[in-house]
Image (cartoon, rainbow, N blue to C red):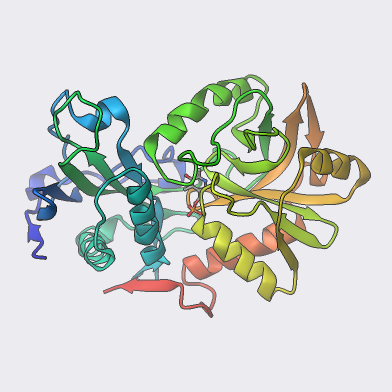
Length: 355
Ligand SMILES: *Cc1c(COP(=O)(O)O)cnc(C)c1O
């Protein structure tokens, strides 16, 4: 597919943030974006152009019925090289989300080629200071103007870029999370497994409850029994019990995180006993009391690895790891961010260089 390139006029190029580490996550966007349209059963008009507002019918199906999916990935700069981390996994997952939401697939190779072209143009926007990256947001929405409930037959796919520092204001330091017993995120057979926009809207209310008690993220339990850990906010969850590192299985209600998959691989190779299994909230609360729960962290592209300092459950906080970052959590963070940013050896073929 031919990608047309229409660069922004030089006098309209934006000023880059002087300290990217201080920019609130996802608030600054680069000069250009990629977009392509879908109609009559095919993608067309692939274009890199100036970052600009969309023109959309007020009746666009995505605005009314939520046909929207997205991805989140990052580009790093190391010694002038621009690096992506397992990017094909994101586009494969985008297509799985598309299946669930009855949306068209994008060709993984075309999407990756478009992203690389965009990154070459925006090379000077990829920050190179430690702890920074260029966050990449591929998005697809149903644009057909129609108020009848049905899958759209016109779509827009686009990619925007945002230079970022740490996801949490705290940086890489323990976060407080809120265990939601009243509200749930996803049920089996629902859309929890898809990276679709409505999942986040559904979670906002519990987020306000979390904020009231000083927690920045919600830890969801399964919807049926309200007993087993699912995931936390924008991240998958890991708990270290003595010498076992456990994470909930991909049972159809949680997002299959690429960071989760990478952490499982890294931990295994560090000689840690890893388990994908159900983890009950009782096991965690009792384990915190008995000292069996030694570490806990969330992981996802945006935050990478976020140590859990405390867990709010039934009107009181439970401190994890004395509120500090656990040893394995730190090792995994160092190894993963080291590989992603090109500082440590990539033994897995995870890094894709943009050139
Ligand atoms: C994106 C996301 C994750 C993390 O996935 P990564 O591929 O590791 O970034 C976890 N949970 C939810 C709900 C997500 O949307």
